[in-house]
Image 1 (cartoon, rainbow, N blue to C red):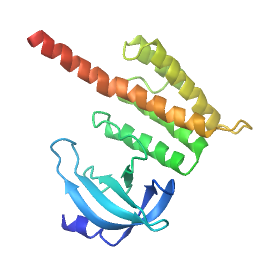
Image 2 (image 1 turned 135 degrees about the vertical axis):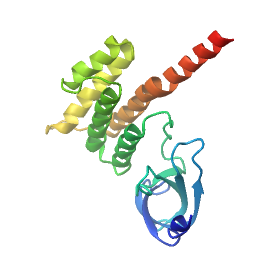
Image 3 (image 1 turned 180 degrees about the horizontal axis):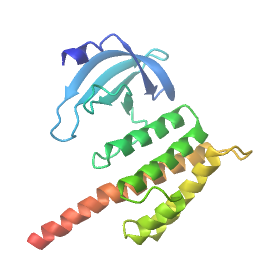
Length: 207
């Protein structure tokens, strides 16, 4: 806790809901949450935007090497927090995509979403030596996603390809926002709803 208190009076980079951009904010107060429900120690930082003066609440996690140094604003609610059932490495990739979006770097956003898809395939045990298109198809063939989710995933892959290669086609804000939302839906399906359904079936079978 002493290390956390040292943050008070220092500046952090965080997304201001009022300014709608990443800003410098001064930390006014801190609180360390326990690990019983979330799996990792969490540092809550109440901060004040140095640009507009409004308050915000930013979160950092400790994955075993100290606070990660990447404050994510959770209030005002600039983005939906991903479930803790989603692997940490995927949450970090997706949060980076959100940071790109917050500074209007829409091309970078869709590229990061594509990286998240690659991470999902790897985490699900798909051989990472093939093209991403084929890896996504293997998710469907193994029964982990259905045809609609495969269609969504392939659309995100193509959008990410457009972002990764130079062209005159512009990645719009709507494109980037949809990419973030669809990637979240895919991860929710794989790691949250599927897990909850399996628990439901086990409970019903035992009853």
